[in-house]
Image (cartoon, rainbow, N blue to C red; front, side):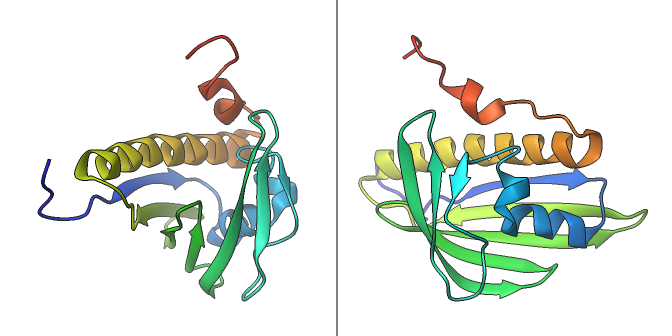
Length: 153
């Protein structure tokens, strides 16, 4: 398959919480572990790499920040080979936040890039759904852990 443009994973969600709270939920692992990864070596702070782990799967990734603008934007590189993830936080009426995620820079053949983009879109959609449930209702849905249960290939 020949690509004319590199694929981009994109997803977004309205979260009915103030932008500062939603931003903090992404940078503070004490909150993020409620809906995404299981462990982190620290907060996302400008210039300081962190390691995120999903212990139920025995995987981890190094996360390096490229840019962070509090309550507005996070640009990071992660995975192996690395891709870029851009988080955009838009303040909305009634103390809500529109959170958009774009992931790009996939490598490999056209088919491999498309597969990675599709998987990334699905994964980040689950992250946003989990964040919404946790931040709005205090519910830990276990979406990431339930995505690939043992015994299912």
